[in-house]
Length: 230
Image (cartoon, rainbow, N blue to C red; front, side):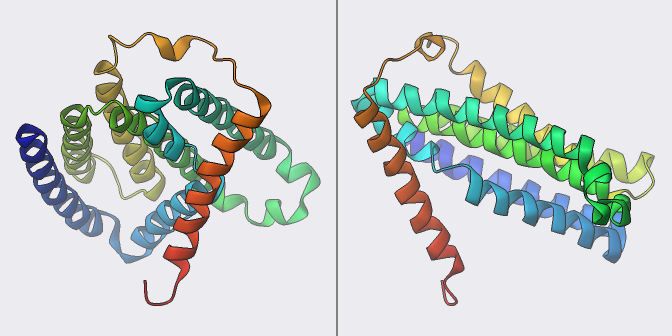
C-alpha cells in the first residue's frame, strides 16, 4: 500500500509540475489568441467526454475485481461506443459542407474541430484504460502512465515552441499524442491480462443495470461540475 501511496504522490507531483511548465511554455508560444483557441478545443473535448462517455469507466473500475464479467462488458462497450462516435464524426466532417450551409461559413474552424475530435478520442480511450488499471489495483502503472503523459507533453511543447510557428491545431494534436502515449504505457501494464478480448455474455437485465450504474454516476458528475459553487 505504501508503495502505491508513494508512487501516487511522486507521479502527481511531477505530473503537476510538468503540466504547469508546459502551460507556461504553451502560453508564450501560442500567444493570447491562439491560446484561446487551444483552450476552447480542450474545453470542448472535455465537455464532450463528460456528456458522451456514458460513465462507462465507472462500472469498469468498480466491478472489474468483484464482478469481472460486468466490468469487462462495460469496457468492451466503451471501446465500441468510442468507435461509433468516431465514425459518426468522420461522417459529419465529410458531409457537413454539403448539407449544412453554416458549416461552409465556419470552414476556417474545421482544423480546430478535427483536432478537438482527436483529443476527445484520446481522452475517452485513456479514461477507459485507466479505469481498468484502477479496477485491477495497478496504481503504480497508472501513476507511471500519468508521469509519461505530462513529461512527454512538456518535452513536445518545448520542441514545438522552438521549431514550429504558433499553431493551436498542432498544439491540440500534440496534447492528444501525449495522452495516447500514456495509454500505451498503461496497456503495457495489462499484457498479462488476456480476458479483455473475450466476449462476455450478460443478460439484458444485467447489462441495463451496469449501464445505468455508469450513467447515474456520470449524471452526478455533470450536476456537481455545473453547480455554481462547486
